[in-house]
Image (cartoon, rainbow, N blue to C red; front, side, top):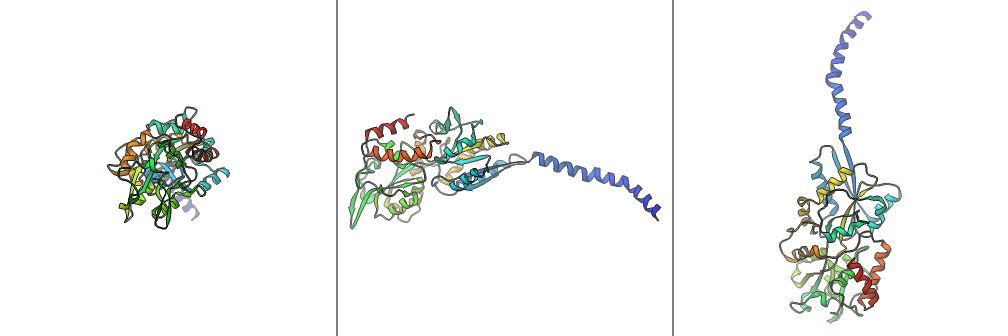
Length: 362
């Protein structure tokens, strides 16, 4: 019996070899090849200011899915983090391949980044804000802009809101209305936008509430009550909020031309092992196909016109190439100092005004 089993086993050896060669070996080789071809990178996105509408993190995720379809075995994992979470990750030694960030966070990230080496097609005024030592470390991929919204019933027809922004305080029934409510994100500087639009503007006692820096949403909420201020110095996000209200006709809007620091950047980690994939994805985000889709976020393109055809959004878009900005990698401490500098300049301090003017024309 043992001899029979031995003969059968020997007879089956060629069968085993054939099965291995035909079925098992190719599969194993295919798995190894697939593993070698697979490339995965991480992109961490942080919102540093309110967008227009929708999620910028989700926008990048959708672009990643589109880009992945063009490249077999290449994947971009997009994750939205808070400012504190990203700093915590860096402190623990955790890193992404690409970062999406804004002013304030940029300074923390600069030591982590390498210069962008892909193709660039971006408005010069915005592109320069991401440059350090003649190299682009922060690639602008979308932008916002400041807007002045006013209570129509309290404003003369045809008025230039930027001229009246800080000089329109008045009594309305039992309410003492300030001239303007001003909304702040963590590190942005709306007063710099006001200064850039007209350096002759001056703050007075009832211009704004200097004691409390309101968040962007809180400033909107107070203004929208119609009992707090004549104007809101807000952003396109507030323009979207107003347009969705039943009483939208009670408000008037104008873009605040001159300056923006509401820019989102993409930067590549100096430690990434997938530089080509990172460069390629950023180029894809900057492509007209992707940039046109920023209208879904009520944000503005950094290199393309035609996202909007009318209204306040069209007026902002038409002016995007003329806006001044500051270097994205300005330290957090200096950014906060510049807020105080703006208040002093708008109160008539000539030295502060001169410093701000120099910043605008670097």
